[in-house]
Length: 211
Image (cartoon, rainbow, N blue to C red; front, side, top):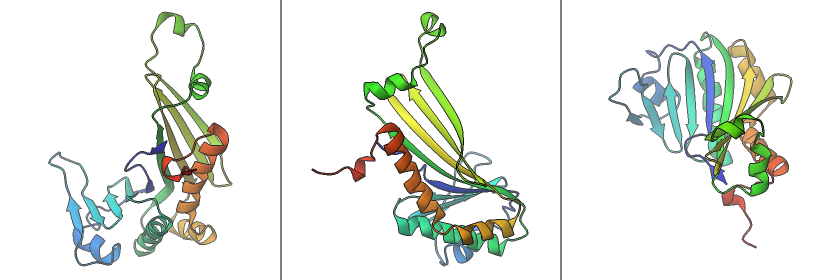
């Protein structure tokens, strides 16, 4: 089992002014650098992507996305700090929620795990099942829900999609939550691995013992 590349993200939903979040502004105020990389698409309406080190920043009118290109504690805490700083700088921006997303893939699931996701009903008798998707909404804490989606594709590989969704009403609530829950991004990453281990007996490939 391993993390799907690019899936580890910190997303803040709101009504963002993409004209403020320009190349120069992002470089100086988010990355604290004079020069950062810019990635753009030839397709219309695809947002610019700003990149420096292990962090990619993708702003749009609906949300801003911090994408971790490394899953170490330092990178995740750095993203959390950058997100909090962004909210402080643009504190009149209407925001409604933030989410932490992580997707894992088990390319060779054991038969026991496959059987647990097979739904046996009459439709199995008439059709070939190409994929099965199971979504659970779990109350994780007072303000945070865990949306956990399990996708069985062609009866051969399983995706585990974690979304830790936290409801907030404004920038002050966001800053208060981050102040009361330090290292939240990293802790939710660790929590997702704990759930995979305790609930599905799965271990991330890079953390398996050599013994």
